[in-house]
Length: 262
Image (tube, rainbow, N blue to C red; front, side):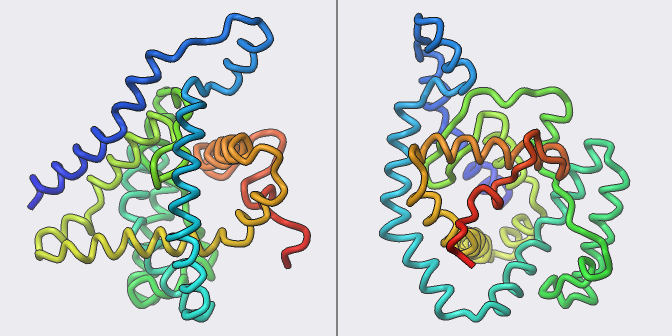
C-alpha cells in the first residue's frame, strides 16, 4: 500500500517536471527596462503559465464553479462550516510536524493542543472548540519548512488545476501529502476512496469560499493573470512568516474583496 502511495506521489511530481525543464530554456529579454520587469516578476514561463491559467479557467467555468455553486445551494452554511472544520483538523498532524522541524516548538505545542481538543471535545474536528478557547490554527507546511532553512522559491509556476505555485512549494505540497498520516491509514485499511473524497471535498470547499471574491476579481482586474500572481505571492509570504503580512500590509482576502459584495 505504501509503495502505491509513493508511486502516485512520484508520478504527480513527474507530471510537473516539464515545467521545470522549460524554465531552463526560457530566454530573458535584452532591453534593460524589460529585463528589470522580467527579473521582478521572476516568471520566465509567463506565456506557458498564461495558457495553463486559461485551461484552468475553462475547467473551472464548466466544472468546478458549477459544483461549488451547487454545493452552496444544497448545504447550509453551518453544514459547510462543520465539513471545513473536519477537513482542517485532518491537517493538524502535518502542521505539527513542520512546526517541530522548523524548531517552532511553541507553535507545535499549540497545534498539538488544537488537535487534541478538537478531535475529542470537538467531535472529531467538526467543531473548532480550540479556536473558541483562543488556540488558533498555525501555518505549517513543507514548503514553509524549506523556506525556513533558506531554500528560495524559484520561478513562478501556474500548475494545472492546482493553480499558482513555485518549485519549492510544489515539492512541499507533494511531500506533505506523502507524510500525511491519515492517508496512510486510509491506504492500510483499503479505503483509498476516502483519500480521494477528502481531496475532492477540500477543493470543493475552497472553491465555494472564493466564489464571490474570484468573480469580483475577474470582473475588475485589468490583467487577471498578473493580479493572481501578485495576490498569491503576498498571501504565500504571509503564510511563510506565520501570519505576518509583507509590506504593504494587504492579504489575499482583503484584495479580493468587492465593495459591492456584502
